[in-house]
Image 1 (cartoon, rainbow, N blue to C red):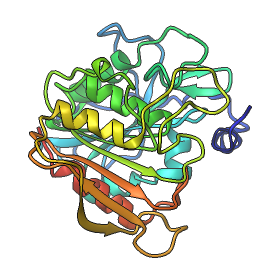
Image 2: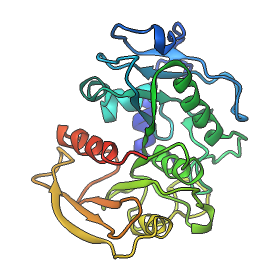
Image 3: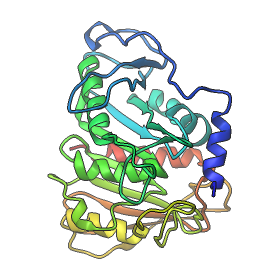
Image 4: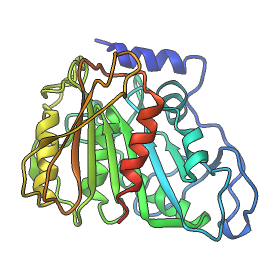
Length: 310
């Protein structure tokens, strides 16, 4: 059974081979002084990462090699690629220029229906293809740090759908490198014991409560045979436990206009209190799996991430 979201992204990819476009290697940070367009960089054979998986990194217009610069890694959904997710869903490139952060858009491995991340048992290596995506993203971060003046205290990850699952996985397994994450329509491991970060990470789960593909209340990925994933509330509850939160999840009183397909300020903001690092749940009331994100979405997401350096 092919899901609407998967079909949408597959259609957006039609007419391409799925292979990333190759460009020149980015120059080292200490030689860069001018603005740059998107370009690819090949990452090294390190940390057990698989070979042959280049990634795109956008260097912001006002990048200064003398200044440590934040990094945002974006992880696409199932069947998609970094370029497709950026161009059809998230549109964060202009924000990278405006806020001056490096913006990496790596691609998952190619499966029978397109790109995927081997995140949790629930999503989305449904074909048992052996791949270590934690090592891959770790190598991407290290490679960017080798070529640019990377602020190691401000390494952030955002992911959508399968990429949202992978975002939680990275926060669990690469907590020493990652300071804050945003998962859009994703989920953590259902078994909390699978997520044992070595240090606290700031976590935001943004989820539509009418999502037909990754159910807000938990369940199984529709159309595939795999273990279940936890609800949005259980996902953030695991992070509240890991971050030592002492207070319950409660509304903050803030409401945002995140989805341009819904009227008003449709997104409810809840947060735990007494945490070593923040844990928040933003619920898009009436929201589905692929919202039409507003400019406010981009501003709010960056404000959350950038407020929580390591």
